[in-house]
Amino acid sequence: MRAPFTRNWWINRFEKPEGEVLVDGDLLSWSYLEAGVLSAISLLVVFFVILNHHGISPRQARLMAKDTKNTYFNKDSPTYTYNGRTFTGHDQFYALNEARTGVLFSIYIMQVFNLFICKARLRLPFGRFMFRNKRTFLGFGAGLLLLAFVTYVPPLNTVFNTSYKSIPLYWLIAVGFGFVLLAYATARLLVLRKSRPIKWNNTIQGLHMHPTIWSTRHTTKSVEV
Image 1 (cartoon, rainbow, N blue to C red):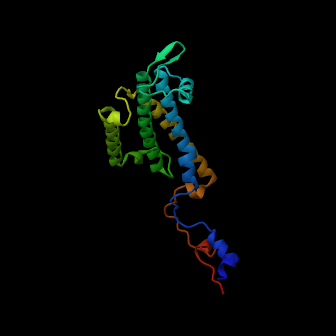
Image 2 (cartoon, one colour):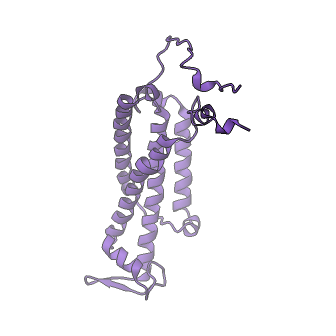
Image 3 (cartoon, helix red, strand yellow):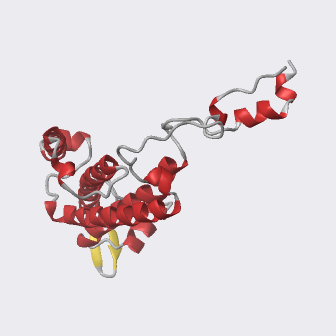
């Protein structure tokens, strides 16, 4: 009962655990603040580029979404006129569906790049080791075929509100952002290697470190007398 009121008990509780932690600050930062933000930017760019191709600018789409009197981007939506151009409900609906299709493929492409980055882990995401696992590419191909099937084949495209008219040209935007993510991950790893060399560098093969009283202190519990 007296253990929680001792100094050593609290020191042991706040010692960092040995081994690899499944979810840590670096993982959360990469997922939500770094790769997550870059991926979100790429999706927004693809979405609004496709809408703009149909004549609906980002500002115009925002005004249509904020309109409290009318609901737009449905088949039965009222006609919208902007700068002398008229958009029927049909035009709005299919423009939105095509933008959704581009976003779906962009998510897939960004996750493919992210997978290669995560495979590298402590190494730079370049080299032959990135292409050794052929099953990875089989998985990519199967996923792409499934996504294309759901997107382009009726009646699935109706169920998921996608458009069979969407062209793969817009996927190149996501591919470009994927290379940006790859470059960022490379620069990030180089910086982390300098700032935290023990954690972010591979273990030197053949180097045997013998434990000492100082290196094993945090793995042993203090004995209370």
